[in-house]
Structure formats: structure tokens, C-alpha cells
Length: 64
Image (cartoon, rainbow, N blue to C red):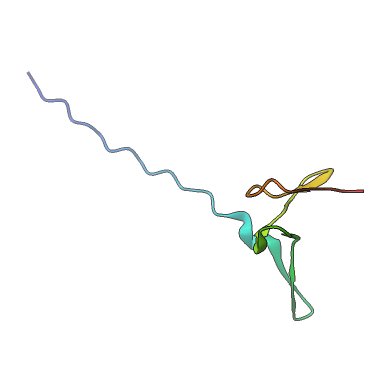
């Protein structure tokens, strides 16, 4: 009987973090997206249709 050889699985490319989209440089100044008041400056709020949301501490801010 012949031996079965296993083929290696191809590595899937991981999608990069979207954190780079939270920063912009306008007129030589750094503009940041909204950050969480509970977690601090390093944690950004997700921008949904009707609210801002922090995935870390579940803080919610309703848009007007």
C-alpha cells in the first residue's frame, strides 16, 4: 500500500487593523477620531449610524 502524503495548508492573509483610519493629518495637525472617556485616549469609539460605541467597556453615546 502506498502512503498518503498530507499537503500543507496555504496560509490565509489576515486583514490589517483599521486603526490607521482613525487618524488624519490636516494642515500639519493630527486629527483623531472620538476616544472613549472611560478607557482613555488609546481606545476609539466605533462610529455607527445612530451611536458611538466602545467595544472594550461597552460605553454608548447616542448621536443627536
